[in-house]
Length: 196
Image (cartoon, rainbow, N blue to C red; front, side, top):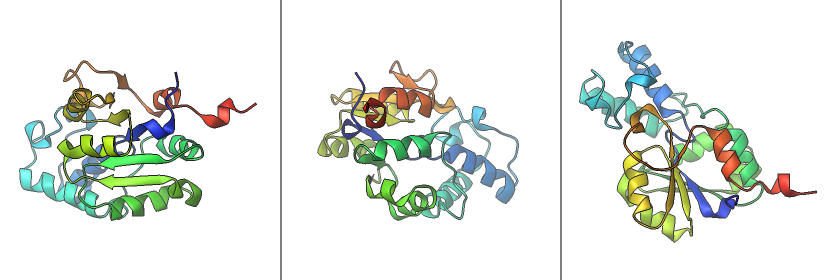
């Protein structure tokens, strides 16, 4: 059965926004670390898989999280079209581990139409491990996240997770996955397609 949009939530970085692309690009163009690709990011904690100093990893992520427009953070392929459609049949809930949501609002304003943004709810938890409470609070039964540990935690809390496949979550879980936004569209009920 297709999932109603009112019952599913979405992580932001790594699911809606291509944060890995922004990190790799900024590491190279701004700091001269150009020897790695997305496939080299095999751990959510980047310092465990890339030869980049920890303070620099933190600086690049801080730049992306505090100003997603200036750092030219891009959408994942298919995310904008999919969420525009979903927003026409209900509220899209985005739950991010970011501590401040204004940069997310600025980014949504850059990529989404006004009507779509009016039907989007953004929750900033400030902590990867605090998503469960907010997911329950908003009556969601399903959640899509790229962090395997978050999805494992959700599964223990009666929430059905889908891991958005990325190199850093491979072989770290035995949960259901989605490879891209085409697969997410196949999961979610599309009211427009159901109309005669």
